[in-house]
Image 1: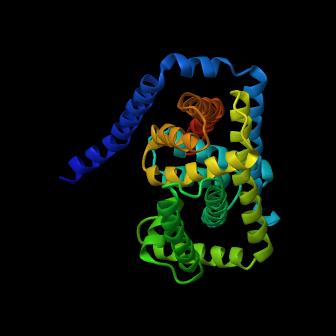
Image 2: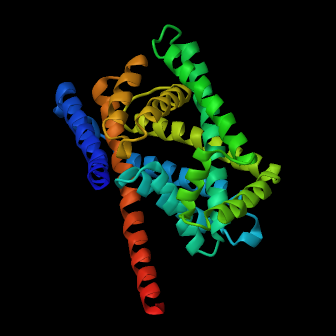
Image 3: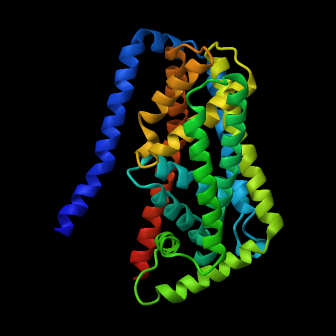
Length: 334
């Protein structure tokens, strides 16, 4: 019975991905495949370069935010954290893993780079927390912009309720990490650490000690959260560049608002690999609030997905090569 349920659960990501691809196909057909293709074809090579450069700059910022949570003696270099973050995002978004799977592999990458496993896991959890809190500020800023620009939008109430719930979750996440921990938090920590069996309790105590040490570094946490906030606004800047490349002239605040509301909506589709279909539908909906034609909004979503693949595919190839070499070393050592 358990094997049957396990096999069935593995089909869920694939099923959701296929459903998402069907949504994308339907949207392209509905809003005119020709119009969407013409909009994409109108983007110059410099537009694609600028859009991709904004993503790379954001990735560097995300690596720096993670690096801020590791002291120099913990051997977590800036470039190692950038690489770990790239693997975390690429595997979590584009492979049929959950987001937790991305966290696991990101922590593994920096631990293979010389960071102690407990420090890798503790910094991953701290990075998740500071990024989440910064995202709440970003969504709150986007909500404030939406209230000012589109005061009668039907999105205001559900996003406000969702933001309030997320704030409560954020407070609970911090309390769980600072205190003795909850059963759910312990399970998440052990999943990332890859620790099971009789030694789990002892290893969790070591992890809790590492977390406590990290949370005494208030200035590092503050810098990490601030850098994450800049990165969130960087995603709005990337959208501004993308819309400009597609020939749409909107203000930077409009682009920030669209991006903030996009992430609020996409949070509901966290269980779908790559948020396939959710992103496209959300862009189409949000673009309409600012008078952006649906085919242009859909084109930006497809441009964004192409940009993400251009970065993710090389990362995944290099990472798998590293894993293969590590496996070979382990076999030779055995």
